[in-house]
Structures are given as structure tokens and as C-alpha cells.
Length: 292
Ligand code: SAM
Image (cartoon, rainbow, N blue to C red; front, side, top):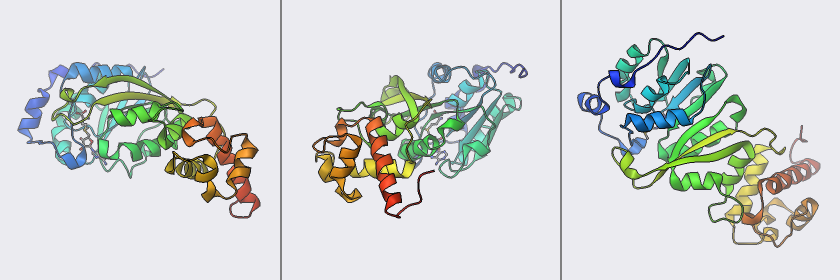
């Protein structure tokens, strides 16, 4: 039985606007800094991540700490926050002190840190992501999604739409295929620009991702290659767009996809089948090691 988690009152600390003024934390656009200062809102995001009893939470980009405070009100025994901007480390010290050992701040670039080395399983990631690096961060975590209970992440709405897009829709593309191959992704809610300080130019969306129970077998690199070729020329028929992979017609025939189909009509299972067939052909041709 995990030890009971001590209560944390997010309102007992100085208001976030005072923290920002005291430490002169003007937002830097280059680091995607758009802060959430409404504790009701950050509380809603933290609750939407789901039950956190016994789960370590990793937060990327705590900034002045609005979401961090909310995460400390959950049952999570530990919150580990990775922040690249040194100015926030000192400003977050009050929260660290109030959290009674439950909060650690790691000064690092989240693009180069493996969260698995920071927190034991079970672990989850919850973050209001810096939008300029949100997609590479997500792809890194998706590659190892089984290491997480869930990911609860704020994206700009246009990216969130792509994550959950269905075949046949305009937003459906490589990111949709890779995301839905590895995870069950669900939109939780949207937020208008005015919810943030300073307001971004775009709407935002919170997305909840959990590992998919039985992902179709496929090799990550090959699936990336196939989807890059297919969606690189998304308006062309696959027999044309997949030519860079070799004998496209034969490949499509092997997996039962019409050579006249276009990338946006193919579902995740179809792309996984294409990736398997292509990899097997490469192995036969001696260009790659045989699939495990
Ligand atoms: N969590 C805070 C909130 O909701 O108010 C701030 C969110 S703000 C959108 C993004 C945060 O990520 C900023 O604090 C920024 O400094 C930080 N950040 C940007 N790039 C980063 C990176 N590569 N690694 C770690 N943190 C980063």
C-alpha cells in the first residue's frame, strides 16, 4: 500500500501573477511560453489526466508553476518537472518547499531527457507543452508509450486535430497514423487563446493518450518511411506515391490495397500492413536485417 499523500493547497502560495512580477518572468516566445494562471483551469487539466494514485507525474515546462500546483493536488506521490528556462528554477522554490518532498525540478531540455530515467513506473506525463517542440516531444514519447500510464498534453488545436483525425479527413496524415498506431488518443477539451498569458495566436486543445493494447505489428522506421512516401504526395495515387519504395503495384497488391487509392483513404491497419510487406521485401533483397 503506498503511503497516503499529504494534502497540498495551491492557493496557500503567492498568486502566480505576483510570482511572475517578483521574479521578472516575462514570457519568451522562443521557448513557447504561454502561461496558465487560472488555478481552476489547471485543476481541470490535472483532474482530466485520470487517477494518479501511486503514479509518478512528469511535467514538461512548469514555467511559473500553475499546472505544477494543480498536479500536487492529485494523489500522485511524486511530481518531476523538467524546465529548460533557468529563470523558473528559483521562482519554483516556494512550490518545492510547500510540496514536502513530492516535487523535484530538473533543469534540462526535455528533447534530450529520457523521462523514464527520472521517475519509476508507473509514470504519466502531464504538460502544457511548448508548441514549437510539441510534435518531436510527442513522437519521442510515443516510441516508448508502453512506459507510461498516460500522456495528457496541451497542443495547439491544429496539431490535436491531426492526432485524432480519421481516414478521409483533411487533417489525416503521418502524425495521425503514427499516433493512432501506438495509442488511443482522445480530445478532452479546447481552450481559447484568452485562457493563456500572453495569449497565443491559436486555439489550444488538451489530448489524452494511453498505450494501445494490441498495436498492429510494424517497425517504427519502416512505417515512417511508408507514410512519408504516401503522404509526401497525398493527392497522387499510391501506385505513384510509393514508387520510391520499389515495385509499388506489387506491394499494394500483396496487402490488398487498390493501386488507385490515395494515402488519406488508408487506415492505420493498412499502413502497418504496407510497412510489414515492405520490410519483408527489403529483408529478402538483403537491404535490411530480417524482421525479428
Ligand atoms: N506549465 C506552464 C503553464 O501551464 O503555465 C508553462 C507552459 S508554457 C506553454 C511551456 C513551458 O515549457 C515554458 O515554461 C518553457 O520555458 C518550457 N520549455 C520550452 N521548451 C522546453 C524544453 N525544450 N524543455 C523543457 N522545457 C521547455
